[in-house]
Image (cartoon, rainbow, N blue to C red):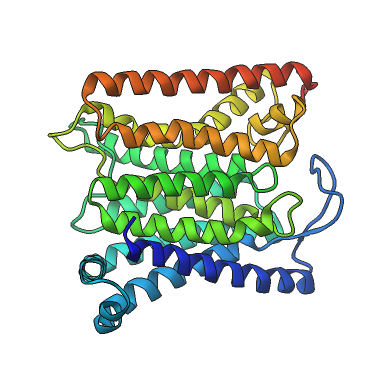
Amino acid sequence: MPWSLAALLAASYAISRAACAIVRRLALRKRFLDLPGGRKVHGEPIPLGGGISLWIAILAAVFLGLGSARFFPDLAARIFPPAEAQLLAALASGAAARLPALALLLACAGAVWLAGLVDDARGLTPGPKLAVEALAASALYLFFGPDPFRITLFTPVPFLWFLLTVVWIVTVTNAFNFIDNMDGLCAATGLSTSLLFMVLGLQTGQLLVAALFAALAGALLGFLPMNWPPARLFLGDAGSLLVGFLTASLTVLFTFYESRESPWVLAAPFLVLAVPLFDMTTVLWIRWRSGAPLTVGDRNHFSHRLLALGLSPRQVLGVVSALTLAIGTTATLLYVLPPVASALALLQAAGILAVVWLLERAGRRRAPPDHPPR
């Protein structure tokens, strides 16, 4: 890992740790709290506002890190070795060249974050949040600039590109919102996926995307101690939607496949995001089969099944993080293995996901249904 990206991650981490401490005190003072009751398992009010600290850390790390390298190149040259200073200068120059697009990305992420913050403070139905997510994704597709922001799947139909892009962003955004069902789970999963995508960015020479994932990973790493069970600060919808939207948008920016590479690499984003996508898919399936509302929270998540099998909350975090890394690491191998070996690696990842499914089924038998059939 280049020292320049390590420094960006460390800066985001430090800012996030400081912001978390300040935001927690302010949330307690302003009574910005998640109150116990209903399906919630915490027995006392917990401060919200983790999403605020994440947003502060990400913005500060991006603008301070890339901006200092752009406007103070002599400082970077004194801090880093020559090769690293050149890399950071090239990264900052690339960011400056794509500044309007980067600003649009952050503005759209900010709109989704704001919708989540309003939901945390006052409560919103799912409809307005989904509308903001879809509009933000549409704005990125339509106004990103000369660089294309789209998923094509090699189809010649522009409307299908638009539909695929919006559906992907909304799906991944809500997958992280769904997995925010237990202390530390969304933050730990987001940290694992961000680190994996950062490695993929370095592997493929996409340094700007790798740097943005480094900033996201550092912010989550700084927040995680406050959110580790038992949590002292919650992400809230502002945080989980922000993590999901940024992750989804940056994967659209990512070029996973070049003509010289094996087509297997197209599976990379699905492998990295396999666990949150699996969790959301199974929960929606269970709700639909039981006749429960699709948008009403319950305890049918994979994490709840692991708890039903007797694991502690911290053990659940360890299992989910390990599974995310185990499946997601396969994505990094697809860029270095020959096609036949890549197919075997994908088969191995499918086997791990089958174990996840079996654990989910076993946990379902141990726990009573959260929603009885209508």
